[in-house]
Amino acid sequence: LDEEQAMIRQGRALDRSRQTISIGTIAPGPIMELSPLLSGHFSEMTVSMEIRNEETLLRGLQQGTYQMIILNHRLEDEALRCHPCGSEHLYVRLSPNHALADREEVCFSDLNGESFLMVKEVGFWDSIVRENMPESRFLLQDDATALNELVLASTLPSFATDLTLRIYGRRENTVYLPIADDAALTHYYCCCKAGDEMKYLAWFQMLERRFA
Image (tube, rainbow, N blue to C red):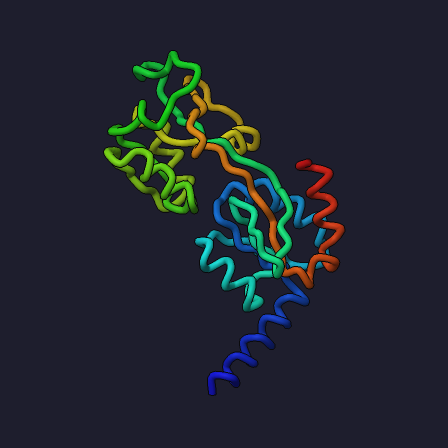
């Protein structure tokens, strides 16, 4: 029965892979940056992206749930091929009258203890900020729209990244400061099974031209 269920899962995954490019990612940033590129490159297929933790992503790639996954580090695994696909630097978003607003950059230690507004689905960034600011409180919102409304009405700090600032721009009367700690900068890698690398070669070549 286990073998039968495994065959059914593999058959369904194969059928989906012929019509859909399913990509799992460790954070929302790559969705914002890569979705338009994916839709243009795989124009005859449906592109699906979702945020999951690394364990789920690796298992999904192995089982065929995902054709590609995006991680925040390169995997040294002969069964996989990983290609750079961008980076992301965490910023803090402050009101102009905040005590740190006149700084050029800040560290997690400067922010530790403050309360932050934060969207719930931030992937691995959630553990980064919690580990580096253990005395802070994080007021989670279910979606970005609700978060943006609260940010407009509140003086509480929140987060942005260089990637979100490039895509959505900066709000007036708001201060954006880069967080200087090494943990606030991440590099992304798009990974597939080694046997599928030639299938997606044109995609990886495009990534190399764009992010090299």
